Structure formats: C-alpha cells, structure tokens
Length: 267
Image (cartoon, rainbow, N blue to C red; front, side, top):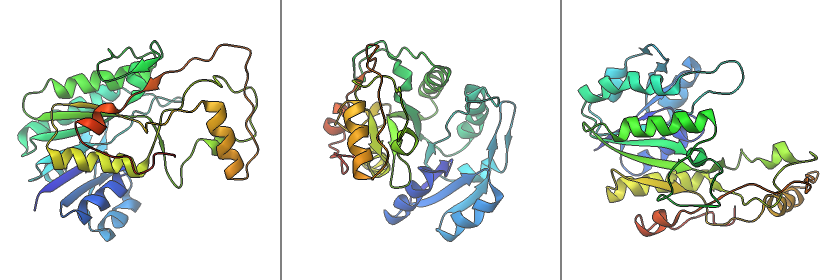
C-alpha cells in the first residue's frame, strides 16, 4: 500500500485525504489545530500536528514524511491583513526533511495568480508575471521545489476554489459598484481539484505544471447574476464605467495530458 503525506489537511486537503483512502492509499495528514487531530484520526488518516514558520518547522515532520513516497503540499500563503509572512522561507525550511525522507515525488498546490493580469489568454506556455505578493511568493516556491533534483515536483495552478460550502456569490450578493463585469471567470470545483490530483498520481505525471480551471468562462456579471438568482440572493451590481480587466485561463493540458474530464463543467 503506497503511503502519501498531505501537508495541510484543510478545505481541500481533508476531502482529498479521504478520496486517497478510498482509492487504496495510506495517508499521513498534518494540521495546525490540536482539535482537528481527532477529526483526521476518525477519518482513517494518520494525524500529525505540524506548524511551519519562517524560521523553523514545529512537530514531528520526520515521522510525518515517514515512509511516504509522495508528498502533497497544500499550504496557502497568509499574506492578507497584518499577519504577513515569508511563505517561501516556510517551504524552504521543510526541504531538508524531504531530502532525508523516502519522498521522491511532490505535488505543490499553487494558483493562477502567478500569471498576473498582463495577458488575456493564458496557458502553461505563458510566462508567469505575478502582480500580487501572493503570486510572487507562489511562483518563487514553485521554482524552488521544481529545481530540486532530489524529488520530482508537479505544480497545479488552481483557479478560484468553490464547493458546496464555499462560493464567492455569498460575499458578492447585494454589493454594488463591483469591478470588471466583462472579465471571464476562472473557477474550479473542489471535486475537480481532487479528481485532477488523483489523475496526476494515477498517470505518473511528474515534473509538470498544470493549470486547473473549469473550461467555462462566462463574464463575471453574467455568472454571478445567474448564481444569485438560482440561490435566491440579492443581485450584485457591477460598475461599467471602466474597462474590464481579466484573463481566460486555459486548462487544455489537464484534458489532453491527463485525459481528465471535468465533473463540474457548469459550476
């Protein structure tokens, strides 16, 4: 039975761990919350309390990596508000532990924010030009991991994450003067995030970078208006006084290289 370690069993990592268990893998999962250890254990996941910081890694990272062959890093940068951090340093501190372990393959969960808004259509061939601090640190972390010859890293650049319990319309409903009404949406459902990760493991698609966005790109105004109507929420109102800025993220490589079919094509 192949063992996989998931660094960060949060909104995506926990259901991913459960999906891996259903597919016959053994899973080590990390959390920063003592209360969540029992949640992991009750799900059949080997629980570990691991906390990353810029200067050190707290917790039994050696046993967490243990005899796993694959590590999935799903730790989002915390760069909003006053608690800003150096995300690159947090991941850099973990690398010596990975190098000493049995890990030889790694999946890094990144974001389409690495592309910025300088292009109108984006594929994996597009040179990333991040214009946010989060995008810059994610790109630097991608490069840090993919340049390491001790393990093979595949990067997944997810679009905006949505799920049954998570949707942007809940924050946009009833708001006014929203920007970029004509900009295309670039979202992906949690189920497809998990499906793509499973497909990468199944097909041994390593040393790769994949954009992962549902191939449906209606305008923000059209999509969020229809979503508000379907959920019986107050309609968002958009500002048309300025030109819309936005890009369309192509996920063709996911469909061709991985032969993956999106299960939530209409979001």
